[in-house]
Length: 307
Image (cartoon, rainbow, N blue to C red):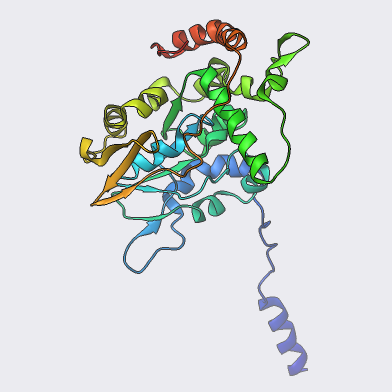
């Protein structure tokens, strides 16, 4: 009898099992919690006091606009910690489904006073990205580097062309992409990426213009120091980058960086010569972008020296 009573007591005292939380956050829950996780997540803290932090600044694009050069130049600043690779968190569903914990794990270790920066050029032209970034941090500072749209199209083609060449795969000429039935092929993806006003409108639905600093990519190539000074001011960084950090490499034909006595240039894949294009076709390209460029200038309240 005593044994039966003891068994009953133990049965009553046994804690109730609570169903475990699903391993993956639902889409809406992830978005709802994104803003607060920036302060809460501190996984992977190092013994020396540094830690991985969600980025306070993202270079959102544009592809072939000079994002790598901008990141390398910005990395000269001692208060900047930059992610080494393009993360593609907000635009690749496979990555985004992993949640902010995964995103955080892709960031560099940094000190509390440092600014963590990530760059993924595809963000600018991906429709879903602005809302997702805003859900993570509506106060985030965004950097957008743009070049002459026609030149950007040629750079876009050149990159893909050389990628095929390295794999010894044939690739059509740029004319075959740009022209269809005697007219400019407006379905060519590289053209769409250069319609800056279309993509900018999407970002301005979620962020005020004051949160987006536009870097003139053409000027950054010709004279990088003044453009980097503007970026420092936008990010409220102390002026640490100097004109002496840049020197023109005559062999490569563009500026390289000098940091603590060490010289470094961008990868040889940067600054490749564009293909020769028939002047008439080039004029068609310039004419095509004339009106879209005007719309973009009106949208951002400034002009650029583009064709």
